[in-house]
Amino acid sequence: MRKFSEYFTVFFFYRLTGIILFLSGFVFYLFWGIEYSGWKDSGLISFVVPLILLGLLTIWLGNEKEKENRKLVKK
Image (cartoon, rainbow, N blue to C red; front, side):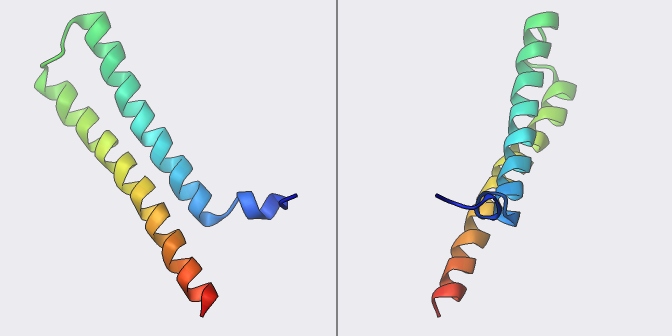
């Protein structure tokens, strides 16, 4: 059985932050589009795209840092 500290690492929080950013952008876009029929609103897109991209990049960063850490631990 794994310890509590094995699950809640820095890499976990990178991924969690990325998932929160990604989902908040995606859900906000869906809500705004359904509520106001503004699917092509440039203000909406300029707000949502950075959230989604930052979320994806943060998830990617967490994965890359974990890979790097595993390489350093093996050596």
